[in-house]
Length: 142
View 1 (tube, rainbow, N blue to C red):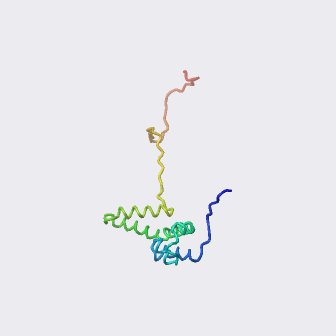
View 2: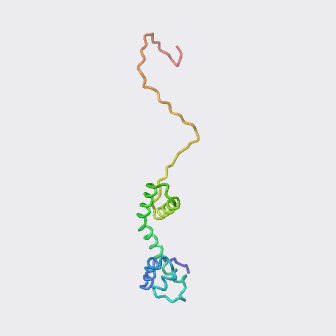
View 3: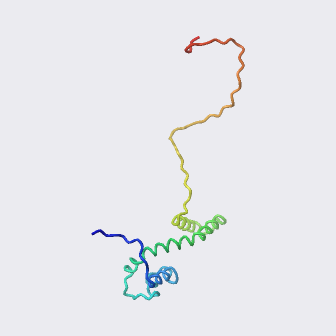
């Protein structure tokens, strides 16, 4: 008998309430969200988390995406005032958030062959005037 990974399970009203409190009033505190949703203190966090894991991940993705405009504005504020205290930490957090929601910096690819290739630009050719005698040559000999 093979085991299957369940990728999506419908949540109960109580589980939805837990998720709402987890991302709301409880501020991410699992024990507080459990209590607000009406779960018994003896109900194990691990058991509940197994049931709502996918919904938590979905809500986290949406939550981060929802706050991406704030990160973009923060980045512009750093550009406007680059010497403000804490900018390095703010920029690190902003970059991390934007990376997680899929906004990544453009990468530049540099192709280095290891050889020094030089290009000379020469002036355009001018017609050469020749007043001498032309001789036909065969195989490079006169």
